[in-house]
Image (cartoon, rainbow, N blue to C red; front, side, top):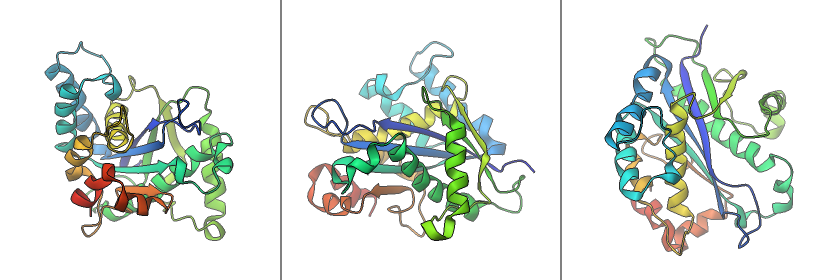
Length: 261
């Protein structure tokens, strides 16, 4: 049977640890979940916003390249669309053993694991008897230069084989390694939505010129995955645990307590 959901995955920030030398403090990985039967209609929001902003047809919407006043209608359109989002926010300076995460793709893969756990919970709990497909998700990554996605598939097969000992909480009937693909954002419009979601949460935590911008993240609340009114740990996952203290003490994260607690 075919997949029931499509999940678009993109990132914001980088995996480097040269703080003060060009590396971001935060790395954000976001997934946008859409029922496959609604996929074509949902991703047309890109065309609608592109026309609204006066951009040429087929012009990609890169969140970082848009001005603030252009980002607002883009995020507003996303929050009204038929989709849900999950974002994993990694505060790299809080990692206790950062040297372990400087190995090739290790930080990225760990973020993917955490993202897929939450994506799989959402898909497991929201498939209805009217939905076609087997309840699984087609995973579409924004293509990373130089990365082979067979390596990602092998990593997931490794996790699946060791789910118990490693404490992996991915629902494997939803996440299937052979249903992972990667495309440039221009080839799958849903990736441009994932780019905007990742960028929205990145700007809410990453200080730029001394300031953060949390408005985009707060606007997205209607489409952030929540369970029984809880967003933290579901649609928003901070990592590592030390970030919990940061949320309570850092004024730039007050939006979390105000809007997502």
